[in-house]
Length: 446
Length: 162
Image (cartoon, rainbow over all chains, first blue to last red; front, side):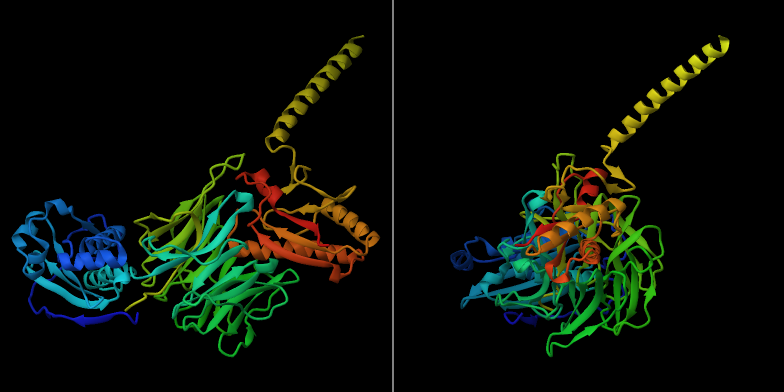
């Protein structure tokens, strides 16, 4: 974040009577907006310098490919084939010939320029409304050259925000569990990658079982469950420094950790004597508080974005259901009443919905309901899938899906998938290995 | 004579019925391998032994941690063996099948392991000789995705710790 300096080049306040392009993200989009992503212009000198530093040639072209891919993945945009572009990228950035772009049916155009100056990468880009022949957005920023992929994501975020009216989710990362080996002896490692599957890094070696990593919404900390020394406990890990520590001093298993929205507490389950209850630990003063006290299983807690409420999973009615309570554990109310079992509730960052996993008649569903339990909507059905995590703008859910195996145990795989809140645009998220337990970070830059 | 004949015929019919029903039930049993009763695995496939005649594991119904009559019988054998071998400590591993969410299954495994631990304690094994660990659905013994595989995986296993 500190590497970025964002300068607004020009802002045109549109006072004209006609409306500029808007993309509605509240419904499934069957007609994605045709958009031309002109390669960002970079001169020879910059290309040579860039290639020397990061071993990638033609930086402008590569960044525009990242933007294009991001836009395509949303399902809201249709990036057009570059072969059809008539105008040179350098000139298009200065003054697009709108007739040319209109001819190839582009409704929006992205142009830009990159240069390497004093070891810094300087980028500027513009978004144009082709039909209105107007500039909609123009920004420039500088960063270190090794951040070049993030530049593509930040450009996408700004364009997405301008066209949809909502924050993007492209300059983000996913933490997940990378899986390998046979189902009975799975090897699991913590892994982190960019939202588009690039820059994968493994944070543990696979010597011990690790599960359910989650981001701190305010910084580069994660919390997860590790079976280090065969003692399943919640850990805290700083991904910048690699420093890790066990959370709290509990005599039994702690699991199902998540951060509070301000990042100052961890909420988790503690199991002892056959009973799991929900606890919090303040990361500053280390004070542990018990939130639930019930002989049933209480787990999978998740805070509302204002921190005032907690949704969680309990079988106090006899089966797994979703409950909501105040953050001190009072006012417990069951909110799931549909057929089947409900688990893994997770509060939307927008505050209005709770995403969940539902098991009914041998099928697993990812769904959403309002925070009072009304308006249940199932987004996707499969043999096995669970653990949704929200994109920071609350528009997309990422989860994992496992395939059915045959009697010999063959055919097993675990993969990450994403789906829009609309129920459209279901996609597999690329990972090098099998993967599970995804958790989406906040936007890295704003 | 006539009565005899009728009786004979009846017997034949009864016998035929019995054979047929035996066949029918054999078929039904082989569908699930005859190894599940009331949703609980009752087979021997995966069972290992702590000592001769002392099975190491008990099985559970879906989402349950209630010990069956058979499970209690197994645990009494474990308790007897533990009382006879006072230097031995055990770890009870609680497991769940793959048809549940990961976090809930971790809690369920812990509950199952403790159900076994509590029973051993009522038969005179002291708590400090028994530790528990839940693996949730992370360590299945059978990697199949079918009711029989799942029933084998819903288990708690007593493992020698020393």
